[in-house]
Image 1 (cartoon, chains in turn green, brown, blue, yellow):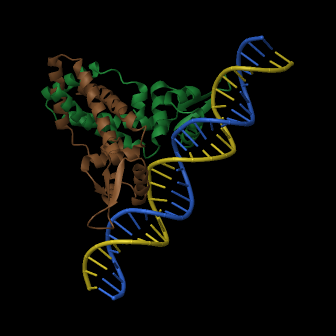
Image 2 (cartoon, chains in turn orange, brown, blue, red):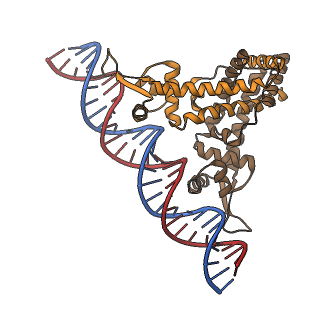
Image 3 (cartoon, each protein chain N blue to C red):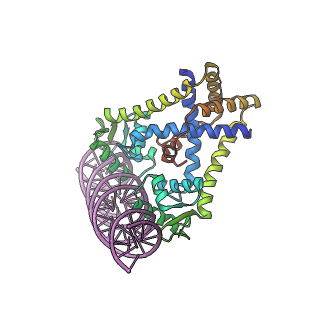
Length: 150
Length: 150
DNA sequence: TGCAACAGTTGCACGCCAGCAAGTATTGGA
DNA sequence: TCCAATACTTGCTGGCGTGCAACTGTTGCA
């Protein structure tokens, strides 16, 4: 198992490289905490401030300022809920959506480009290995992934 | 190739989860920029301020404060070079070394734990897939990995 | 010997994240 | 109708990262 662990660690470094590169573009426009908020909104749809704060694990007041900046940058919209005027709903604006989608696309492209260097047989071996690993891994919790802005 | 890309993306999420969790402990003691400095020192050994600043891509003055905090936390040592008194050499202190090593160990453990859920045959398939992928991937540049503190 | 280049540090300014405490507006139940 | 709970916001404070400009000490060459 040692050798498979070693191989997996090495591969994880390569995959991390892809993730890091894909994030770099986004991080030129927003900070990491801001990007994390965008990711949550992209994954879970429009959210109330309170729910978003809980998901991100930050104080409501912190989120107020963060959202303030995201609104200023046209990455999200903020409006009071139609049925309950004391609730505030945050939603992705087109620019925010694009930011997250582009990062995803870049990541996927670089993975695909890597796979393209392999023969069909090898690619199949990679697919099988990755699938097995993913199945064996516990689904990483949302908070874990958020640490790194996924 | 689409299906292998999909599988790889899914596996990368799992691997990212491991990385994120392994980082969480370290980030309770130091900030991400501080941790990145520790990683560089762990990988490349003691460094002059100038070299470290270039590697990290930050202004020398920025590094001065960052190192200041790391010294205050006993994570690194800072002393002037023996042969050239205008140069300052930063080295990992035991606490800093432990911080990085622990994160590495935790990461490896969680990968190993995942692999343990597989049969020997499956494990072998994972090993082969991971090796192929790692070989096909361009070595991720140091700056890329540093973004995420590897 | 003297002066320019070099290596870092310090002063300064700014933006961001972060939490606490207090305030405002809204809602819903007594 | 009134009051307490709810959902956010605002004022305040503090830490961190960041860069620029100016400064100090050191080195090495002319």
